[in-house]
Structure formats: C-alpha cells, structure tokens
Amino acid sequence: MDMRSFVLHNAREAKEGARALAKVSSEKKNTALVKMAEELRKKTKELITENKRDISAAQKKGLSKALIDRLTLTEKRIQEMATGLVEVAALPDPVGEVTKMWQRPNGMMIGRMRVPIGVIGIIYESRPNVTADAAGLCVKAGNAVLLRGGSEAINTNRAIVKILRDAAQSQGIHKGAVSFLDTSDRKAVMEMLKLEGIVDLIIPRGGEGLIRAVTENSQIPVLKHYKGVCHVFVDRDADLKMAEEICFNAKVQRPGTCNAMETMLVDEKISREFLPKMLRRFKKAGVKLKGCTKTREIVTSVEKAKEEDFYNEYLDLILNVKVVKDMDEAIKHIEQYSSAHSDAIVTKDYGKSLRFLREVDSSAVFVNASTRFNDGFQFGLGAEIGISTDKIHARGPMGLEELTCTKFIVFGSGQLRE
Image (cartoon, rainbow, N blue to C red; front, top):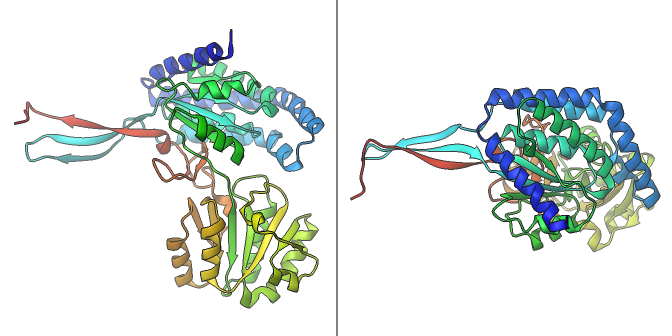
C-alpha cells in the first residue's frame, strides 16, 4: 500500500468512527473512558518498556535533555494520563447542549445546539501524553481522532493507542474513533493535510517549524497551538518574595513546556534589590541567563542578550532578563515579542493588575500566578488537546466545549416565508 492509500484508509476508518460516535450516549462514552484509564494503569510496565526504546533512540540522536524530558513516561505521568481520562469522563457532555433559544415574532423557536466537529487530526511531537489526552477529549466530545505523533515517540504512541483502542472497542465504541498513522514517514503528514472532506480540523502541536509547515500545506482548517514565548513582569509594587517564587516556578519547574517563562521583565525601581538574589537562584538551578545592558550592570556574569533572543522559545533552562522603566515599557515589550500564549504580572497594585489583564492580548493573562498554570487540567477543563493562540473558534486551553461547534435548530408550527 502506498503512502496516500495508507493515510486515506486510516482517515476513512476515522470518518466511520466519527459517524458512529456521534450517536453514542454520554454514559457509554464515559464507561469507555474509564476503561481506557484502567487499562493504562494495568499496562504501566509495558508502556515504560516501549518508552525506554524511544528514549534510547533519542539519546543516540543527541536530542536535548528538555526534549527527552517531554518524551519520557514515568509511572507518575502514566497515572496522570489515566486520571485525566477519568476526569474527562466526569465532566458534563457538551454534545446536544442547547446554548441559547429565542422566539421570533412568527412564533418560531430558534436555538443553537452543540455538535461534534467530526474527524480531528492531531499532528504532534515528543510528548506521548498527548495521545491519551487527545483521544479522551475527542471521544467525549463525539469526535473521532486521527493521531500522527512524532517519529521520536513511535513505539510509545503505538503502545498507548493499542491500549486505548482495545479498551474503547471492548465497550462498543467503533474502532475508528481512535485512529493512528503508524508510520514515521513524514510523507504521511503531507497526505493527511490533503484530506479535505474527510478530516474536518487539523491541530498541530509542536515546534514553530512543524506548525508553519502544517499551516502552509493544509487544505483543511488548522487550529494552531503556536509557540510559547511567555513573560513574567515583576512590578515595582510586587511582593518580591512572591515574585521570586513565581518566576522560579515559571522557568524551572518544567522548562520544556510551552507555558514556561522565556523572558523575565523587572521594573527598574526594584531591579537592584530583586535581581542579584533571583539570578543567583536561577544559576544554582542550572539556568543559563541572557540579559539586557541594565541587567548586566547589576549582575556582571550574565551573558549579553541579542535582539533575536527575545523572540525565542527555548524550551530549556535558558532565560532572557530585561530591566524595564515601568509597566508601560513592559507591556510594549510583550506586544512586540510575545507569541500571545501566556503572560503574567506580579504586583500588589489592583489598578495595574486590571490594566495588565485588559491590555496584554494573550490566550491567558495572569496576576500573581505562574504562567505554568495555562493548562486545561489546571483550569478545571479536564485534559486539554492544546493551547490555541488563534482568535477564531477557540483560544487558550482547548477542552470539551472547544472540540464542538454549534448548529442552528428551529422549532416551527407550520410557518411559511412570505
């Protein structure tokens, strides 16, 4: 079977799965999700064995520690995957919800009802937990999912999909509901992007290069999970101890994620008090620091930051540091360099916090909290399928509601248009 035929076969199977799944009750979907979680827990050792094969190959290729961390499955992460599926099962089913209803002068009742999108293609890199998150959310929202993970996680993803698919089928869910392009050939992605009319939506998750390639080549609508160039601004009115903890968490807790801080902005008025201790703590944690001229005047050991550094999503223990005159300059910097993903302010000034929330145009804006919280699980949405930086259809963490669309429903009593 050539690549086009292979991809088309899997996509058509997913289409059949979507049609079947759209008719399945909430109870049946929930039972399947719980079963999927149970099987993941039971087969933890098997998953870790397959994951070790991928990690070994990644190490031989010389992938960074941050990327290997994203690829790695531990018992804890498998438990989190399973917990995510159970939590999605416990969430209200958005399918069939009538979100609004109104009456026209002629007596007709008009409304909007949530319905599944159809077949959702997920193209992603590294993190194998995306496989379970995407499958669980799509199934609950009545969509079939067509998964194409990165070659670096092929063994792990194959094992996860088999577990999920077998569990779903055991509960009467069509096998096409969880479909997987089991190949590391990049041609599969290009063929997948041509399937307009079969695949209804593409969601790419990965580096900037992947997202640009998908967007430029897709004949299907794309919802972009764009890069995370995230900022934390430490205002002159901040609680500096709180600021230190937030900034450290935002950068160090898990630097290989899209919601990790890449640039720390510090108000000039408190910079000499705040920076020496903060930067010592970062250095002790192994963070490579790049700073502006003012930062380097305060801490001379910091490497000089170049203009292009402020556009970088490092996904690693590397941090830009910039001293700004005030909040106006901080917002101006964010407007220029942010990827509109996650940005935060640390301040005790209520007026400034409200202004920051209004003026910073990102998918999630935080006051006195780490950017690491921009996450569907942390927001109470259950798992997420990605964090959209688009403004049309969905923005921010994409949970169940964001995986549906609406259609108009009309109740009449014989009305005719004159």
